[in-house]
Each structure stands twice: as C-alpha cells, then as structure tokens.
Image (tube, rainbow, N blue to C red):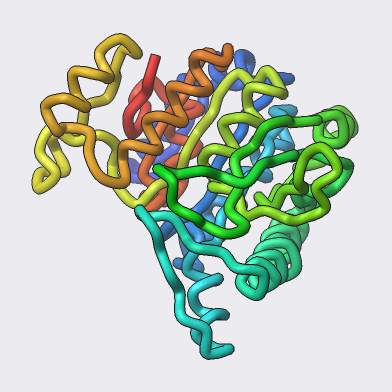
Length: 291
C-alpha cells in the first residue's frame, strides 16, 4: 500500500505542476515539425500522435508539418530510381517530383491522419497546394540546378486557421505550387516550411522534433546539451563549430521563426517518448530553446 500511495503522490504532484502550463497554452497555436526517428519508429510514432491528440483535446491548437525523406528514398529504390543530392539537397526531376508528391501527400499524410483519428483526435490532411497554402519559386542554391526544389515565397494560412478554429488538427505535407502562374509542383524543405507556417499563423511556439538531444557542446557527449541559446549568441556557435552540419539549417529555421515573431522556438529529441509533453508541461524542458 505504501508503494501505491507514493505512486499516487508522485503523479498528483506532476499534474499539479503541469496545471499552470495547461492554462497558459489553451487557445494558443503550436506548430510541430515532425520527422526523423519519431516518424520511423512505430512506438515513437504512437507516442507523438498521443501527445498531439492530448494537446488538441485540452484546447491547444496544434499544426503538424511533416517531411518524409526516408520514405521517398524507399519508394525511389523500389522503382529503381537513384536518389541524387546536390549540396545536401535532393535533386528533384519531374519523375522524382511525382514520387515525392505521391509519397508525401498520398501516403504519409494520410497515414498520419489515420493514426491521429485512431487515437481519438480530429485531423485533416493538407498539402501546400491545397487552397494555395504554400507558394514557391525554384530554388537557386549556389548556382546549382536542383530541379523542382523550391523555397516558400508566400503562405496563405486561411484554410489552416479555419480548421484550427473548428477544433481540427491540420496535418501538412510540404509540396507547394509555383507562384505567378507557375503550375509546377515543388518539393519544399519541411523545416523551412514549418517555420514559415508558424510565422503566418502567429504561433506561440515552433518545435522541431529531431534525431539528436539538441545543440551539444560536444557531439560525442549527450550530456553536454545547451538548453538555451539567445538569438544573438548563435553566430558565436556557428563560428566555433558547435553548431555544424545538419544542425545549421534547423537553427536557421528557429531563428527565422523567432525573427518572424514566434516567441518560443525549440529543437527537441524525437527519440524520447512524449518529449513534446515534457517540453510543453514541465519546468524541466527538453532539447534546446532559441530565444
């Protein structure tokens, strides 16, 4: 009996500590970029979806923006088409673009919506093409031709806001339509698209679920996590190599969102079950916050 009372005491204390956070976040908009291991591991996927549904149930307006690089690679392998990368970005010819659109909007998006519905949530799948949500232009990366890879030039969030206002969870795949009469579809980096959507929605928080604990002073030491970085300190970490490789674009997206008016931006470890709830409802936090 002592063990049961202790356990109950523990959980009641957790709920009491979480209550102020519940009150703060109800009615606010949170944009979550979902990808990495949290998208590949079935147990982690289930945990993320449960978190999203819980947030939605208590009145937090959650937008889920997802990528799908590994699934795209798998489909390209299946059809015998080699993946090609230029300066770290996927080269996307017209045939690859068809596969990207099919995988992101036709398969992954609907898979995510289905899981959210199974968990008791209200979810609707969208792509950047729907209602002209995302407009893009062909990207020019150091003069290299990347095919149908685009950068977002306009966000028209009205359809997303309408869904949020009626209690739905919008699930967005990052395929965009061209601008100024350009009818091509473009493959958009999901981190960048999520940041721009967060700005357009005037979100209170932008969270990227990643495959690392956050920004580490020593990449070989997971306990060297830097929990908070002021935006004017970022360049120092770029210069000394603390922020390097794949972390650079993620930090740049946080900076973009912060400079665009999003008060809180975070990079958290999607490999930790329920990391989103830990970040939202505890004073511990998790990952790295750019502020």
